[in-house]
Image (cartoon, rainbow, N blue to C red; front, side):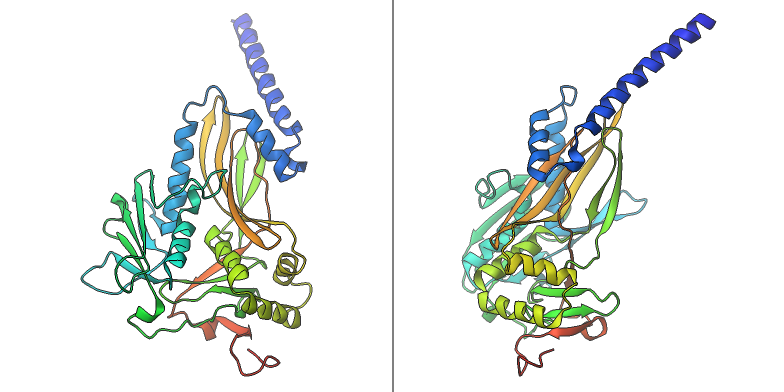
Length: 373
């Protein structure tokens, strides 16, 4: 009896030592101190573990999860195992077609750009080159048609069992064809201060046939804590601005140069130098720094042998000499995700009580440059 107990104890000690060696090796890899490119290269070199046959399926699940979040806000109903879906873009204009949403795009090219904002979650190492006008991901099938009928600059058909009673079509129309006289409560390129936090926000998209977007680098994200036997404790930045927000920023810099230049002058004139949003925009715009921003991530928790493991798809936005590109990195097992600059975005609509929530620092179109806001 005693001999058996000793033998069992020795076996347990040997197994514990093996796990400890494996864990210490992952820590000694030095991923914490590595830059993004070095860490990613190491992740690629490790490749797939031989006892992990479900890796491809997991990656596809993560892409489906991210594509759905680009189409709808998804809220789980506690205790029910179900979820509710709220379309993120568009508005129902006709009660006879409650699943047909409309949004504004003045040209077929602009409508196509908005479509690619949605499907950017599917991009691979080649960027958007592999994505066409028809995509199938999990139970989601999207078909985009530019142009089309009169007063229609594009049409996106959404075929997904989960969304059949929510949204089936997103129609892009020019502003001139919009049936309502609606103006955005916050104009494009406005600077506002949130009264409750003091955070400075930049308006990147007006609420005109879609939700408007406010972006800040002052705060609003939170740390999401993870525990892994491979990596120890690590954190991700939760609630960072999504890639579509940085798409809007990149498109504004590229196509709306005068409005952006005037806004940047107001940033320097009216926001204290120590403010994070001012410093970040200044480095991006004036100093033309190469900058990486965290956007969003999806993950799945699993087990590999006896260790807790996280499969993580991390989405980032990169600006190089003011030019925007989006990209994604997949991390698994011993690879620890590399954190970049966090951000936060607020969405608003035509009914948002702007005066109760914000005060203007700069409002384009006011009477004089010296006294705007």
